Length: 461
Image 1 (cartoon, rainbow, N blue to C red):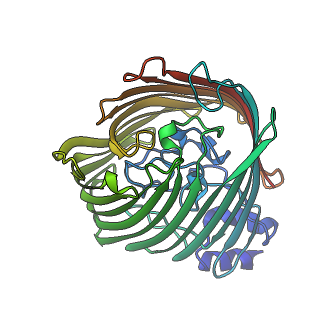
Image 2: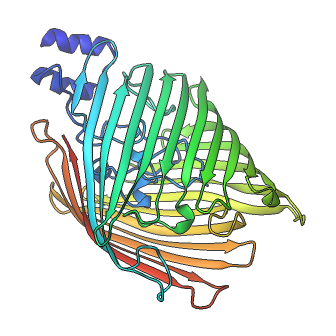
Image 3: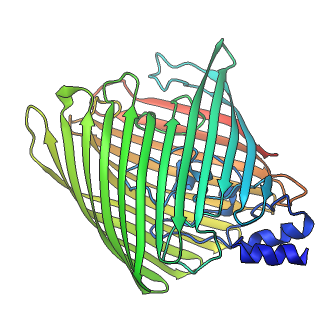
């Protein structure tokens, strides 16, 4: 056993995995907390409960991907990517490069009083059942960001994630499925990082997630990112990306080319500041919608005055041009992704977030809307097993057609999680209540609302 541990030390395995080697070299110990995980700049620290369930309301996915731009809507399964959260590994082998597999199953049974999110004269109740197998494979140990303390992670890594979701209407003979695939390959050391990423995701309106109809579309996302540290406290970063969005009906299908460059300065161990720019070109499939070009100049700040408080922001100006007939003047506006987290005790965590961004509409045939989102969320642990979570969110969307939408939404949940012990595989049971309302200013009697109540069970084998 001592020789095995010494070999693991030489092959850059996580020190976290060494206790499992004393039991058996073929099984890796599940991650028990985020205490040994390093967090990237400009994102909020996730709660430890996020590692238990592979889905959570949008605010808990906020910290999922440090490489997403602020205008991107975080997708359902991004928290289980190798560089974006921790799930229990149920099988693994050690050697020059570690290989690990995580197999899980998530199911949800819930009742909704307005399954298609329609007005009161068209709403319909339904009981839904969803089941999602989770298959995840990691080769090597990902290092997801720079400007952090050196670790003994492997230089190369690859990750594959596949999660199909099957859903059934219990009141009628209707069933369908949605898919999510995520693959990434990277190389990282103490001075540089390169990451290639491909994601395909189908998000359905009748999912158990509490999301706006503006966020329900099929996404294909490919990106390449490079970072290099030129001095102890100075890092340069560049990113190229391609996205394709498909909706039903296909009136707002579009492709999005994106480029980003920036620099990060470590002012002190607790403060990091940065400057950057982003450019994008949006092409709509319908020629009548034309194209859009935008440029952003932004500043970033990540301030951690204490281990229990933190503030992060990416704020700047955006200039957007519209290439279509009839012509429109250039739009100049403020954009920001800002967050604050506070941990008043070891059992309670609180996040506050503000997002201001411009985005082509899914519902209004590609017209641009300006969205302002604000809301808090919290997690509280009653015991090591029992916990509660809550989220409130207010979204305001003003469209260039004159339409104005208000969307308040919320989610409350009480859950039970199993001990994170290798002899007891990870199990999480959560009962939730969520509500969502949309009010439109331009169309009388068009307000809609929906309430869902149900239970979600996540099991890793």
